[in-house]
Length: 311
Image (cartoon, rainbow, N blue to C red):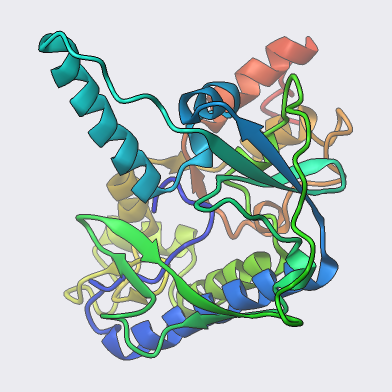
């Protein structure tokens, strides 16, 4: 989850079992709404045919594969190595087709097809995520050992399912996959879900001491519920919050006003964004990792000097 843009509900947070199901339902609802909105907008769908699956992966990357396809390729590779060692011919890579969803000139998704037919999104009608039984349908497992989401869904076609299939298009020399590979949340439903999670967490934090007060209390030994264990996750904030200990625990550093000016100097002043994020401006984010290094690289790129400490 540290590398994911969207925080997922954790099933190992103590005291949060009652809200885990509700948080999962929020996630499924947002995902379902985003999928159905995409279906209704009917973005462009393109199909590319390749002589072999290896050719598709070589041209477009392994991002086109799902977990099952990756496992199947690994199994074929092991068989090929055994055949080679035995002096036998290896199994040839099967022909493959890749579907591409594009909107506004940007690739939203690339996927190796499981079957020979690809229909326009408008033929799908409506999608429903199945989540009444986590053991047999959709489920979320997110704890210290692993974090994975499995989604099972049903599709209710708009008509009789007899719409024309998407034809084959020539494979372009290059496909811009940066948007599809990005960890940034692109759907408005996902942004709203993340904002709601952050707002809930910050509402809990707001009942605790601000960073300066907490640091002062940790120095003079003061504070109320000192013996109460501090717990801070994306979905739970409890105990006596010590921001100094939080910074130490997560290996981060204080986000100082001077560092924010440096960041503003290489972003807002360069015209890349209109303003710093509101959580930075309102000092909701109070620590960071490696922002100095990012600023150094951008300052070297733009050829600008950092602002003085006293500015």
